[in-house]
Image (cartoon, rainbow, N blue to C red; front, side, top):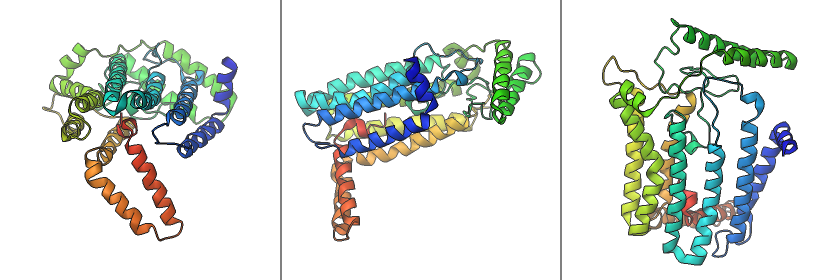
Length: 361
């Protein structure tokens, strides 16, 4: 196993290329989106899990885990969530094949419930930081309040930091600032031997800094008051939205507008709350949530997820499908373009039949 880990880390670009090629070819497998697509979907699931494992191996390379102010997780949350997402599609296909369209929602509810529990646990373990890509991307921060990039190129979260970053008037603040600058300098060093020496010195410096305690629920509520409570509500709503959506479909049916509108309202409320608490404060004494670059990108990603509502029933059946088929008929006489358009429409209509492809969870 150690030999495989070493090979993946040394050939990560090659591994990424192979994974992209293999995942792309799965869309061309025979019987994709047919009633008996358990085999092709099983292949896709296995490839997805292998990809998640490889990403976990690369992300947990020893060079990236220099000791910092936050202890690493003992449980591989990102790997678990990635595997659950890949497995969920196979669960949906198998449940639909053996139990029918109506009863498959019970199995999906169990899967979504498991993902919600894992994400809520990760949310608590991370000190109530925003989950990136549903928790599949780590939002760990070794320099509280740092606005620049860390030595590995990631950006730190400033969830509970003030607008001036670490307090330069105390010893810990000066040490954190010095460590941040030292890491940026080390990243630009081109000599590998010198870079390794700098990493070793950085590890020694980091070990001498007291580990920052992760904020607890009571700490956030006492220090942040209403903005802190609103942030927690907004993030929990976003985490729970897929489960709410599936449970509502299980009760009302996929053709009902109630799940569609309830899910949309939940997502709108979550995004509105997060935008509000990160851009304003109720009074001058309260500190705003200053989002890192990665967290701002996550907000943008969540807003893009609203496009998926165009592909969900009943909106898709009543409106989107007609537009897609109309475009296909218009472009059909054009050589090559007509064929590619027909294939694209076929893939979109096929993917739309799968909840997991359009869930955004």
